[in-house]
Image (cartoon, rainbow, N blue to C red; front, top):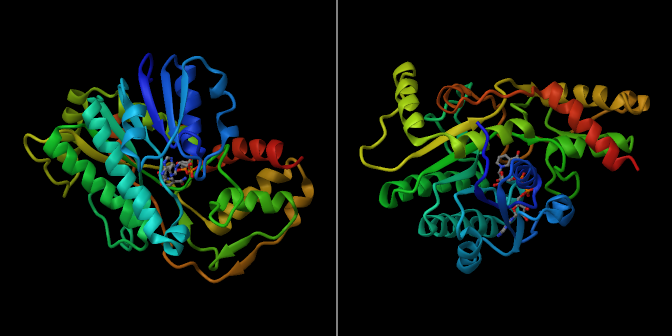
Length: 349
Ligand SMILES: NC(=O)c1ccc[n+]([C@@H]2O[C@H](COP(=O)([O-])OP(=O)(O)OC[C@H]3O[C@@H](n4cnc5c(N)ncnc54)[C@H](O)[C@@H]3O)[C@@H](O)[C@H]2O)c1
């Protein structure tokens, strides 16, 4: 299901995930508004969008009510991506992560409710599973949070549910699992693992693995994330509700939703397979050796495991499949092929 001919606000639209959403939505004849304060986002991510007549950039902050209200005016949907990502950043400076990820979230959600949007779809996180050991992760079984970042993302889910109950706004939270792909920033102290490894390998420098490399992740290619955002916004409410009932009947332990409240659901967004960091390292060496055979011989170094990191992560994507029709098209391997090509073109000059 494609999102077409609508007006959509993408917050954090200058970032990695947001800018990819912006470009796809513009291709599909939507009018797109981007609200971003460029805290981590980049103007160059919007190079194509800025040439488009149906694109509006609002340079502003989700912590400012006026910016939120201006950005969401007349929009059918919100795809809320703006936040400060990274577990280590939130350990270094918890107050700012809380301010943006919770304070800003609530302001944006409230503005969306005031503007009467059809649905508020937001970036939640796999970090919400915290210390719960069960694999694969199912949406209704979570553990204790392991970082300030994880707490902020979980609190957002609570607010989304609460606003949906009291105001009737429809919300869908997408718990992203380690997203990767074009435009994910390789620079800075808080860079994600794939771009960080890629940029080191291209320079023939040994990337550093935190821990012994056995930690595993369900790596999710950006195209799968775009697909599910569109489904989460466009799926008709009656269809979601009917399919949720079927999902509950098929899945033991899923709680009943409260009568009378609006729609407020969360879904895992992943591929549904996991790879260890050692496996990822090998796949990246292989993927980049196509461009530079010397990369095959670059060795990885190992350091201590990092505070706040979840050891293993693997999603059940049954709920998204059944309820939204989510069918991820890209595995880690096929996603890495595209991502390596993009990074090679962008970084090897
Ligand atoms: N990348 C992942 O693997 C992953 C995993 C789980 C969840 N998420 C969530 O997905 C969303 C997008 O992440 P991303 O990887 O694209 O990160 P990103 O840092 O590339 O994008 C975030 C964007 O939000 C903007 N922003 C930050 N604070 C803002 C503020 N106060 N007002 C307005 N704009 C602000 C930034 O400038 C940036 O453009 C975030 O909510 C993140 O927590 C990402």
